[in-house]
Image 1 (cartoon, rainbow, N blue to C red):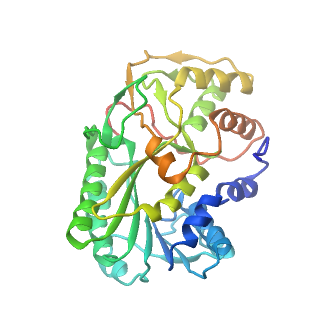
Image 2: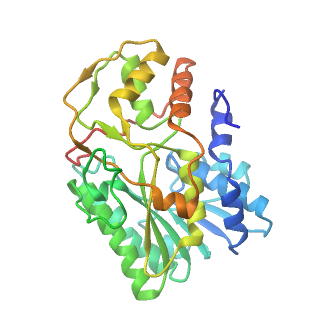
Length: 342
């Protein structure tokens, strides 16, 4: 049963970290500790909590270790929920080498925003760092986050890009993400490391994501740009559940799976629904293009389970959250960027 509204941040993070039965079953079949690298971002803390909750339900004792610089805080909250934390600069080779061994690794580190103007750091984070991690964990099974941006724009109405499609990255961020995938695939082939690459597109929750971007612009009486006229969205808790279940799908050579919402959603329609629920008139600008960054999620549902939260519920939750003064990250997704500049 999904709630009609999400009351506060505590309720939100509890819901985001709730494991599905499939996650519990998957982790029950996998022995050993779990290390989550890059766990201090938007998705990492509740994914690490979900891993802890699922592991407690699955039975076999294991450590769940969250690794990040933690410059924005969050360590104490994770530790209060039974997740161990390690502060680490992942570009420091010696620090990475000193991390605890683990048979299960979730790789969430990466750089997107701020890439334009500091491209060398973006390439170092997205291409050099995977090689350090693969050298540290050659015998582990790894789930490595990637992005649907590697596909480039896909014609609307065709269901989105599929895993076997040719990659056509636009901009240096997307190019560096192809480089990240190539590094994981190289080490998977050369050293037998079992890897699954997750191409995520787009995770949302009440504080961040495409729906918050749209609703925030509506509340500010700012026009909605229709140039990127279609999107996929998936509840962040569902994306985390699929990522943890994916540990059981790691293989050598590396496998690839899209993590995406089941619906090809029209931005104009989303904005109008949000405007109605927010009690605001919606303004639009630009012209809807015939293509967008879209991903087809069927393989992910077959392998990892279908998302639990439908788009209409996410829209209702988002509108209520903002009307009731819920906090947001203040960090827009820039999902409407069509030139690959972030």
